[in-house]
Length: 408
Length: 230
Ligand code: SF4
Image 1 (cartoon, chains in turn cyan, orange):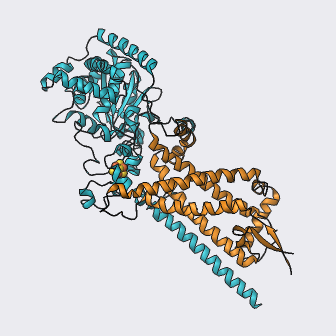
Image 2 (image 1 turned 90 degrees about the vertical axis):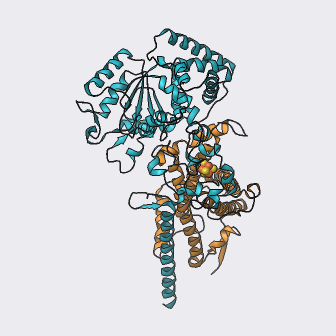
């Protein structure tokens, strides 16, 4: 009942995806004041982690110039005027003041992997290395009771201050027993609720944590859901995609460091700076889309000429994300650039509804009312055939009846 | 046996009918292309000359706008037409319900029991067309929802009010259809088939009426009149 009411309320209050990139001098002046104040306060606090961005950069052979270049790019990504660049740089240096507790639920750890396993890490990724990761099941050395104690301690010390980053979906089936953690077999749901309770904000990273992702795909055996379906009454930031782009994670945390608040979000709680634009509108193959030049088959002439991937199932026209602008792996490439269509991984229910190698009209979806999976066109043609047969029968019967009457 | 001529559609109504009919065909032909480009453009042409998908989309959006305007006119006429106010036939009064079933029964029994006044638009007709207009409204809302995705910046050449209004008016279709932008597309596509089925039945029924009622019904949409036995 409550769920229904919530859905209804949401329906009429859905926030549009409008992005305001120029809010006027007054707004930015006051924003700058807030940020300066916040950064000063942060500077007073003790560093929670011994890693500092300067030492990490040095170790990687990057100089201050590279760092400042990154800062101005990050400033643009967050849709702030260029005058904010020094603040961004300062915030990145203060990243080690913000404690983060990163919990891992039902997932493949792909988001952690995306951040940590690159052989040429970007500054985004390096900055994530300097955040004060108080607890991370995948990375930390501690195990068992020791790990649990560690978590308790971190939660206690940084009560109300830490960011709770969640990776992975929450299985609710069988009372949550599909996923448990620790010696006392605490279910993922309880684990999440416990850690989220005293956090400053919850950041759901990756599509599993945001919308349930692959574990929640039909028939969803474990009853998997996203963080926002479990945690209520907390600021939740969703950073979907499979994996989430490290640039967007850094951007969100940066924003939190700068303002102490969550960035502006869209109707799915995704930061607008990253998920405000449609892939299709910033795609390098868009000219071919408009021209009607499509790849018809993997490896054909069209594919060799970088034609649009729409007919190979590209879901760029219905997916909001910034991959087409930010790209992955130090801006090297991204799926569409590499020749595969977008699978809509930052949208809810993407595995059931987006991730097919065919355009929407040819995709097998569950027909209305369930039953056999059909393409929309198959279903429609079935409907038309039925209508045609009905009309045919009626016409024939009318003619026959008319004849009989004539005979009489 | 003599026949009386009765007017059933004014000139404006007939023009509207054919504008809608042609728009419908254009919308279906271009819409199917947008959903799945079913012909290829000539590879030898440079992109700037052909622009095939863009033209299809342009045509689709233009007929959509014609539809929208015509729908608004029709909606207005439901209540304020000086000729005939269709909403009067939609109110479920006893007479209307009876008329609806009389016409339906006559259709099912192959014109055996024609006990209603066929000189004016009957309740069955009114409801049948009401269903059509509802389908069109649904196409309009889902279509505009997909359209506004391309206006992510919140700006448009006619001002910020336009995307803002579209979000306000159509965002709920996402929730209603299943929660994703894909569901809106699927619904838009399904509804097209419902509309084609509706057209098939509509054309058939008009021809059937002309043949079996013997009152020249097919002329309603051409000359505006039909004939009633006196
Ligand atoms: S490849 Fe995909 S995102 Fe790019 S233009 Fe084609 S359909 Fe749009």
